Structures are given as structure tokens and as C-alpha cells.
Image (cartoon, rainbow, N blue to C red; front, side):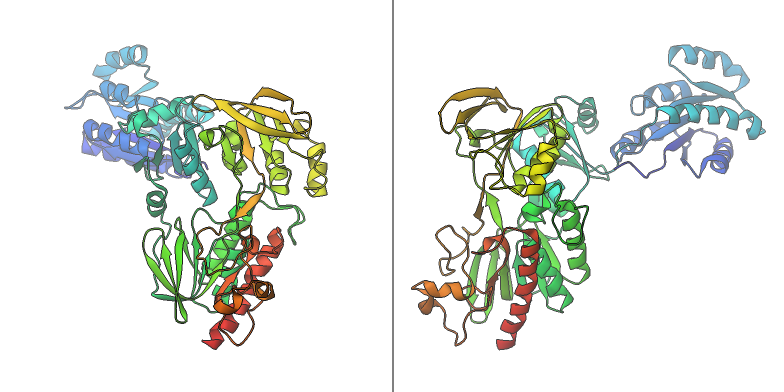
Length: 556
């Protein structure tokens, strides 16, 4: 986002009385549109410029006295140009120094000189400053104000940080060190080298060199530690089901904790446009839905832990003990597992080598800007693949959708198929699969194979986005949570089909509809066996799970 900070007018004069008069005159005329800074020391002013630059400030105009004991005004203005080359530069001189001022116009690109005194300012100061500021504004593009990420486009760690920032709804500016001169300037400003990349510059200018995701989360103010000793309900996973459970748990007075290992929203959160969600006839993005839900849940009292997952669930009497990835433990009376699903890995040779360096799982919105005017391939025929392709088509020269079937009719919603047909730079490659990814340091080409004729061809590919089906994010669960042969969690009456159910379930009642084989542990959303893969149904299950949590808590 653009900066809401006012540009700066910076004045320097070693005479306190002159400086005070100059500062007052500047404030009277320009305080509404500019921030007025002043100092009586040119050395102090120079020392402040790197910090102003790091903080994303912009100097519109310098006014400096010529004769100062430690440094001449011309020398100061010349050095100040290093940090703010676009700023206008004005020299304050006495009659005796006009010759030096004229030389400065020719030698160092001085914009103007003013002779002291400048009374009345309405005639001798403001017309000059107005003209210079108008010229400056004509070329002024507000400085980005927020988080900057500097790195190499095809380095997995850079992608990981981009994905984290985007997923957690932090606006940021991406600067590729290989192609953006501004990236090199920021690196030099902080006295860092390319070996220190990726570099995150926080809004206040603080540099984080190659930060881990938990470190970055902490610096950005995301909670990574629980505040309560015991919770009524802990929800694992902040996709649509988990977010809905958090909203209803918080609103109904339960002490509610929501834990997310990566970013809120799940796969739905990365969707560029959800067109079939009830109540939004124009559709909404996954990030919009996520932002609204997180705001709603926290406003209603739910606590949210980010960038940490749950490694283990242990049952101790009526309590469940959760062990987090950082080793901390949480006590809770009930648990809702809403971890959703992950995209399956592409089995093509070489794909793993380029993951995060041209090969991406989901992540269409994160990497879209890097796809401008390039050849992009999307693997998959479901709605996520279709939404990703539609979004990427706004940036890429050509988007190729690779599917094993002949067409999309059996796997994608008709509204998406109609959209894709109407976009000229999207091509469907039916009866085709990717069998190999090629490149040196990053993806450069892929090998396509016709599934019937087995004919192969090598094509240039700048990026490859994978949406090829899903697997449940349930591999971390203990063996005493019953799952089907694909790893989806069984719940409710479906549990009775398992021979070991009776040896695990020791309650007189039957399991609730969304309850697992362990009393007080529920599953909701895509991770649950038999769930519908729709945002609306996941939201409904999350809300429903809280109803059963209430019934369970009434028993214990």
C-alpha cells in the first residue's frame, strides 16, 4: 500500500534564531501537506537520513544555510542527494555568498538559492518553494509503506515467506534482487550482502535476515503462545470449518483456542475468487472471507495461535493434552480437528527438486505477479485449478491447463468452465500429464506425455502450479483415532463398521454425528470422511461441531 506519511521539508541552519524563523514560516504554509523537520547541525541531519530512508520516509525538499561551522551547505546538499536524489535542494545564502551559490547550480545541480532575509515570505520564500514542490510532486510516486521482502524469485525460502505473509493477510512489497535496482539499494542501505537473503524489512525499518517463519510471526505480532491454562475447546486448523467453529465457540461463551500451522483460510483462503458462496452474488476472494472470519472470531473472544501446529494428542481422563511443534503443551476439555487437506505431490521426475523454485502447490495468488508475460502450466481439473488458471490468466502470456481426462466437464463446476472458455489465453491440454520437470537452478521446461499414445514433447515452462487432488492432513494423529484407508477421519455412526471400535469407545451413548472414536474429539471439514468439498459445507460442519461440544461438556 502507498505511504500515508507526509513528505518531509528539511531545513538546516546553525543560527538558532534564523532556524526558528524559517521553521515557523514553513509550518505556516506547508504543515497540512508536509512534515517540517529542522536542525542546527548538518552532521546531525546527514546522520538522520539513512534512518529516514529505512523507515520509508520521503524528503521533498532540503533548505540549507551555506556558511555553517562544520560543513558548507553545498557540501551537505550534495551528500544528502545520495539518500534522496529526487528531493529539491535550496541554498540559503548571504549577499556575499551568491557567487558560491551560482557555482553550485552548475556544479552540484542546486535547484535554487535564497538570499537572507526572505521577508516578506509571501513574496520572497513561498513562491520559490511552491514552484519547486509543484515540480517535485509531478514526479513523486508515494513510497510503499509496509513490509518489504527482498530475495531471489526462484529460492524456496523466498516463496515460503511470501506464502506466509500473503496467507496471514500482511501487505508486502516483493523485490527481486536479480532484476530490481531498488532491492540492491535497500541491501546496501543496511550494509548487507546477497548471502543474507531473503531479507524482510519491517514497517519501522527493522531488518530480519533470513528469518524463520516462527521468528517472523513473533516480530509481526502474531500470537504463538497460549495465554490460558485450560480451554473448553481447542480447534486445530483455521480453514473454513475451523474458523466457523471459532466464531461459534467464542460467541457462545466457550473458552476457545484456534491453532493454525501455516496461515488461516486453508485452501479456500488461497482462492482468488469463490463464486458460489451463499450471500455473495458477485463472489469474494478467499483472503476476504478469511479476514472477515478471523476478525469476527477474535472479536467474539476466540484466541488464535499462528505458525505452530499440533504434533500429538494425549487423553488424560476428561482432558486432552496437546503438544505443539515448539514443545509447549495445552490442556483442553474438547478438540475439533479441522486440518483439512493438502495437495498431493506431483509424481513427475524432478518436480520435488524445483518445489518453491518454479513448481508451486496452490499459491496462485502468491506468485501471480512473477508470472507476467510468461508461459504458465496448471495441473489439475478441479475448481481450485480452474480458479487458479482464471486468476493467473490476468498476468501470464498463456496459461495451459493439463488434465488426464479429455475435458473439464466431469471435475469442474460449469460456471468455471464457462469462464475459462471465454478467456483467450487459457488452453486446455486434455489427455495429457506432466512426466518430468527440467531446469538448472529453477524450473525451465517440462515434459508432457499423451496418456493414450504415450507421445512426449518438451515445452518451455516458467512456472508450474499443482492442483492434483488432495490427501487429508491427518498423518500426525495417533493410531487410536480411526480413519479410512485414505486417511480421512471417521465420525459418528460410520465408526461402527470398524472391528476395533468397541474396544476403543467406552461410553453408553453412541458417538455424536461429528465425534471421532475418542469422546470429546470431533472432526469437521475436508479432513472428515464423507465430507463435501465445499466451503459452505465446511462452515456448516464447524458450526455444528460446537453444538456437539456443548453436549459433550455437559456430560463431564
